[in-house]
Image (cartoon, rainbow, N blue to C red):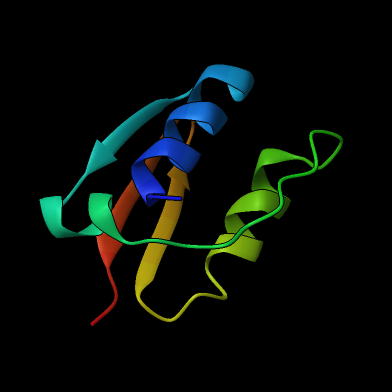
Length: 68
């Protein structure tokens, strides 16, 4: 599914805001099986295992950008 869909689901569940640093990241297609019992920090760590993106958390906001 597109990363944007994954992030929108996470944002709603964990009640956090999302900041996209570049629009290209939104269309990245990933296979990720989300486990709702995981903390947001664990989910961010797991998503960062994909080399194409870099996700950070700042309080109640997650920031997504393409990896450099």
